[in-house]
Amino acid sequence: MAHVAAVEREKQIVAAAIRVLSRAGVAGATTRAVAAEAGIPLGTLHYVFPSKDRMLEAVVAAATDEVLETVRVGMEPGRGVAHALRHGVSVFWDRLVEGRTGLQIMQFELAMYSARRAGTAGGDGLARSQFQRYTALLGELCERAAREAGERCAVDADTLGRLVLAVLDGLIVQYVAEPDPERARRDLDRAMTMLIGYADPRAVGGSAPS
Image 1: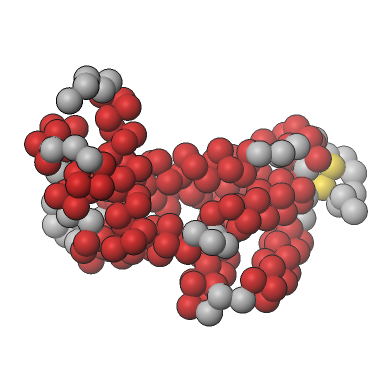
Image 2 (image 1 turned 45 degrees about the vertical axis):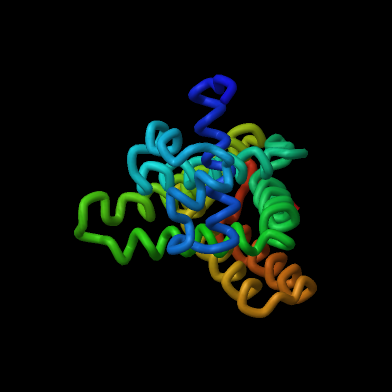
């Protein structure tokens, strides 16, 4: 077997784990199944990730990084918080929800898997890490847009990030249970209107943007 750099091997395993998790869920994502998907010996996987939990932590990090890269496409922070939210959420929904429901189910299942193990070694760390990463991502997105557009919101970025995440999670669960693209788009637009109204971004020393 040709030598593969450690970083590349980790990426290979994480990509394989995401495919298996999206297809078979946490229960089906054994290290043996992931190694087979990656086309590597089981011992190689265990060398890179000594435990399944370590592998799942890397999966959560990779999934969050993909969301970050996705919402940044075409982003114009200087246009303000309202634009940043509408654009980021729309691109996220286009690329990572519609047609990729398996990926979304995987992330919910990982959170519940971690919550069920609360109180055990490493019990709830995965779920906490997952939601902290997404909340931070959304908060930073809004904070940067406000800064570059010279705006101030009526609510802090951390709270706004948590609320946006809560709304998105709810809409994703509805879409997974009953896929209806048109309804989902309408609800997404209304939800963003509601959240932008609550955030009330205004130019510093001025009025709310139109």
